[in-house]
Amino acid sequence: MAVAGLHLATPLPISCTTSISFPSNSYRREVPLDTPVSNLASRICIKQHSILFTYASTTSRLKWHVRLTFSAIWLPTATYKSRVSAAQRLVRRIHLERIPFLHDTVTEVVVSSHHDSAALLPLPLRRVDKQDAEQDDISLPDSWYYIREDPWRVRFPSYTCDATTRMVPLSVLSKERPLAPGVSVVRLAGDERESYVYKEIERPLYTPDDTKMIELEMQHLKLLRNANTNDDTDGGKYVVRFVAAVISDNPYRTSIDGADAEQQTVARGILLEYHTGGSLEEALSTAEIRQIRPVESTNAPTPQDKRPWRGWAVQVAHGLQYLHEQGLAHLDLKPSNVVISGAGQAVIIDISGWAGTHEYLAPEVREVFHLAQLGLEVRVRNDCWALGRLFERMALAAGLDGQDADGEVLEAAASRLTVHEPEKRMGIAEAVSFLQGVELTLGDGRASSLQEVWRGQRNAKDWLRDRLSRLGDLVKYCWGIFRPDRTRTDTGGSEIS
Image (tube, rainbow, N blue to C red; front, side, top):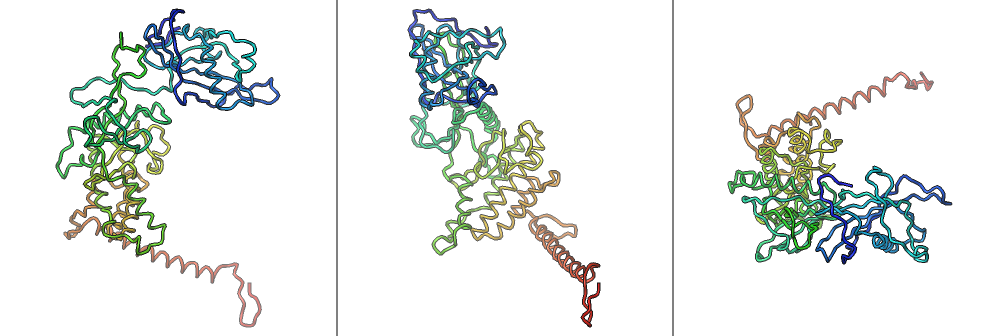
């Protein structure tokens, strides 16, 4: 039996000393299979189960990471704890030394009879006493197996050393506190003055897409790294900056002492600059609380509480424009992906460009599964929509902070950015000009700002809406008088139809 592109281990000598260990939370129950057990009194679906473990040979200094996946029937009285114990006993019943595990990865041993018959091998099980078998909660319907590379393993991509990129070993990181699943504030050994953000590949509820997102974000950050300057007009200062790639030895390495190992350096995540002002989501939530609670003298906004909503909006738009100029789209712009620096500036984070949040997706892309595969123009227009949704919340917060004029401008920009027809949607450059009140020359030679133009258009729309409303009232009134089915009463009291 062979697995393409992977090196199989040869069976171990019977005299080898071996050990088995189970990490915490290694047992997992999958969805029920489609095969019912029809010969039982009640129909019971066979469920698929898996358990992770490491199998080491202290004699040959080798260690394998293994997942055993099997379909099993459990007694009705089986608890979670008893299922875990039964799965561990099953692992110990197998002659693991006879199985050719894969090197430097996670081998999945699938116990099944539904596979290519040429790849199936009889499962080498040890005999058990009849008394022990009766006490077990598990019954295996299959006694054949095949192996493959575990498709659900945490995938750590190989990392090639790059002279232009700083690399930090995972071992020097010390976590201070979590920010989100897989994201933490960390310090480096020997650099206690500075804090960083560490985004790691291995995280709770991991899927292979998590690895792809970290790889893409690292590529994009490296692309932007050399373009960032301290120029006040440079939009790159409003995009998070790359610090280093976090690396380690391959955690699945088979050779315990590293002998005969090929390229074993892998990426574990990325290190980013840390901004201490919290997220825009937190700032918006603080402002929106005032809308829920009655405004009292004790919680009314003070000058110190007021945030530069319009200024932050301009900075986010500048950062987004900068990404687009570099041929990148964000795809997941939302308040939690904007942070505030210690200097009070808005900074865009999470620039993998891989996936989006439905609430901030433009109507034309909401049904698209792989957003990253869309053309750049489509993705840019989606960013415009997301920016408009962001401005809607910022406009509300500005109004709650007593910044009515700024709230009005943000609301106007939001309405232009969230036009349903993508080709009619305001662009990012136009949004920046709109927010900054850049003057332009009208047809009659008068100078006016985009905001004044919008106010004039809005006043005209309000006038037209008022006239249409009055016309509608008049039509209803006339219809009420002259409708054919109306029954009137003449002066003499007789009904006239």
